[in-house]
Image (tube, rainbow, N blue to C red; front, side):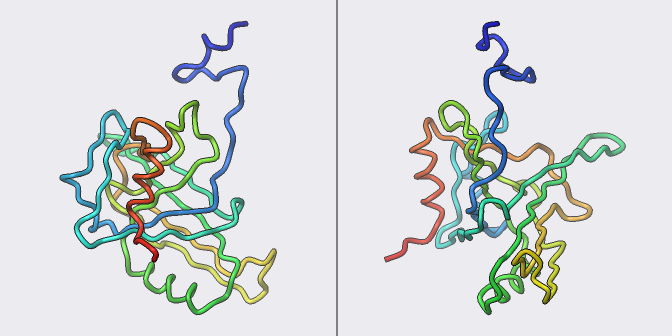
Length: 191
């Protein structure tokens, strides 16, 4: 069997299984901070992503296995939509973590995750969740039992009456290195 003939579209490549999971960093930006006139997309791939002047995204680090992204098809009367979801487990009980959750409870954000499956040239390394409608903190659970060391279970998801028009958008600019530079450029410069 020639595996190269089975690698396009919906047919699985018999020679390689996709690597599951995410790397443990998530980049969050305020939904309203995206400069949508300077952001470009073609066929679900974002080639330019820019924030408004003076605005920055924030990166949060997790253990790889404590961060999960998913999307679900929502069949509606006229057009299908997608619910975007980010589940995270916070393993530290700190005031900084509590403060961040307080802010997230009032915010609408867009999330960028880094897939372990990156494609042949890094073309599926990054995906953006919540670009159309944003994500909101819809669950935040805490138990002082800290089962498995988990202090907070949180869920960012599409708002109840606002879903996404597409699957999570891929972010890719010509090659993996250029795409990495784009993502890092969204973050504040640390002296």
